[in-house]
Length: 330
Ligand code: UDP
Ligand code: MG
Image (tube, rainbow, N blue to C red):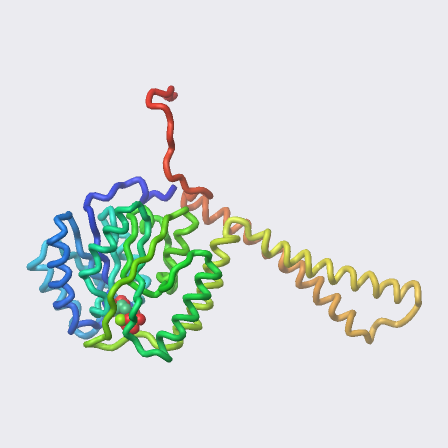
């Protein structure tokens, strides 16, 4: 198991907020969060990750820390992106439950108690669903509708709104999911390999009042590429040879049959085959087949390195049940 999963959470709640140039929103967000969190009566921390802001967000956060012992600020050296912000927050989080939320007040801190109620029903991930999403239709809502359908279909984790930042995770989930690139919207899907219970609840959503959105339509394409990665990770990351090997065998086999046929034409029928396009195809398929097979073998090596260097097992245990006074050696 991961080394981090051996330590234990010592707070009830961590709220993780990636922040990039939100100087107009941070103070109000902080005070609204504080009101909601203080009312819960839980031990909590707020982890604000300043993702290389250049507009004074960092300075403002520093002054807020001075008056709020719950607030912890992590400042990146440059802009690393929202996913990196989540990852840093997850690494530092001390809460049994970890909530993520946007800094631009498009999410409502008042929804946090609802997420917690749902978590209390025994879920490992509770995802917000922006039922009445307040963003432009053509550039944001439509692409996201399509992407959501696609992600749901491809990953087998059925949510309406993967892109909503307002989510709650169990401590175990955030400590065992490794994030790269822009994979944060796929956390529920990535976590599904651990056998997590995922729920979704409708949350409020508001138009952005201040500051600018950091994303445009180009994000949709990148989401599709990420989806390929996630699908591969979920299905074949422990057995790459089964994917590449199958394709390789198919290509090689096809090429071999064509080559055999051409050999008969040449050797038995004594006809020339030098000018036949089939010959090219046979050569191509055989080469590609061999390459795919060796790629599968390399993949197997990489997977072993991955698991063994990180002490990762190929399984995830929920619990071990045994009789109280069973014999233990040593
Ligand atoms: N954000 C970040 N790093 C980035 C881009 C965005 O930390 O490189 C933060 C941003 O400050 C906000 C959240 O991620 O808190 C969502 O960003 P935004 O509101 O621009 O996205 P949208 O709501 O338009 O999808
Ligand atoms: Mg936003």
